[in-house]
Each structure stands twice: as structure tokens, then as C-alpha cells.
Figure 1 (cartoon, rainbow, N blue to C red):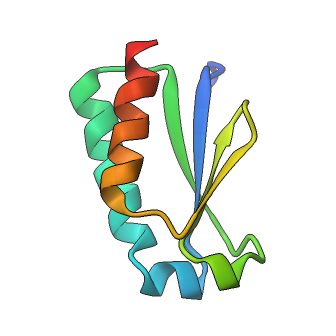
Figure 2 (cartoon, rainbow, N blue to C red):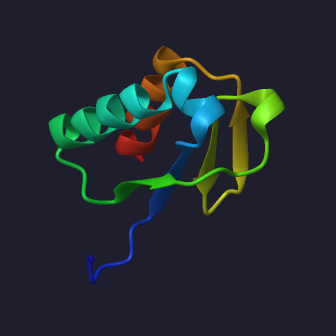
Amino acid sequence: MKNKKSEHIIYICTGSKCDKKGAKECYKKVKKEIKKLGNSEIEVIKTECTDRCSCAPVLCLQPVNKWLLNYDQDEVTKIVLQLGRK
């Protein structure tokens, strides 16, 4: 576990419905984008089911508490790039 506090955290639900809609692939892509940026202020965490299955796939951006429902990988990549510029 990391000892630092990240400025931005992206929680990606990897419950069964989100997984079927590409959540785990999105998680891998986000990790890759963060690594490319070399930004240690963004952290991505896989979660279990967030109980929003009807809106799958689901993720949450913290500390702003913004939920993305039915997102696609391109949308998430744009968010990572925006966070990396701040």
C-alpha cells in the first residue's frame, strides 16, 4: 500500500456487470495512461460492485465525488489527461 496521499483517485467498479462491459480493460488502460503521464498524483483503484449495475460500467472520481455511468474508455482517457495537466 502506498504511503502518500494522491490528489485524484479513480475508483473503477469491477463487479460482474461492469466487468462484462469492459471495466477491467478500462482499468488497465487507465493505469497505462497514468504511467505514460508520469503523474503520481493520480491513483486508480479497482472496487467490487458499487450497486449501480443498471448503469454499468461505473466509476467514481474523488475527491470531487463525480460518478461516470455507462462510460467508454475514450471518455476515461480524456479525464485522466485532464487530471494530469492540473
